[in-house]
Length: 184
Image (cartoon, rainbow, N blue to C red; front, top):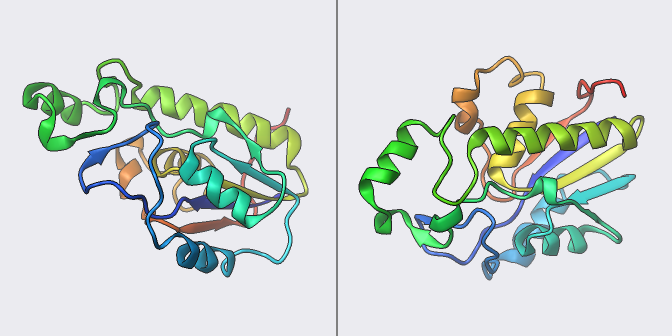
C-alpha cells in the first residue's frame, strides 16, 4: 500500500478557537490551497477516505469522486469546550487538561486515548481494504498525527507525548510509501 495523509485547508475561525468536531467554515483561500494539495498527490489513486466534517468533506469531494466518509477520522471532540476560545475556558480546568492531555478528557469530550483508539480502528480498516493500493486520507491534525505515530517510519518510534511535535500545517500532505500494517 501507498498512503497519503492530507490535512484539511485553513478554516474561518478566530485563532485560539477549539473546534475539534465542531463543524466550521473553510477560509476564502480554499480553492488555492486545494490546488496546491492536488499538485502533491499522484495522478491516480484507488481509495479516498475522509472525515465527514465539512472542512475535510469539501476537500475530499474536490479531489475526486466517491470519497468514503468515516467517523473514525473525525478530530478529537472537545465536548463542552467546542467552538470556544482558549481564553474563555475556566483557567483551572484548562490548565489541568493541558498538563495531563495524554490521559485526561475535556469536559463532556474525548481524551487523547480515545482519539488514538479511533486511529487504531481506522488502521484496521486500511489493513483490510487498502493492501496493494494507493489510498488518500483527508482528516484532521490530531487524528493524522496518531496515524503517523503508528505508520510513518520516522515517527513510529516516538513517544506519544511528542505527538504534537509532528509538523502538520493546514494543507499538509504526508506521503508514506510503505506503511507497516497489521495482518487481518
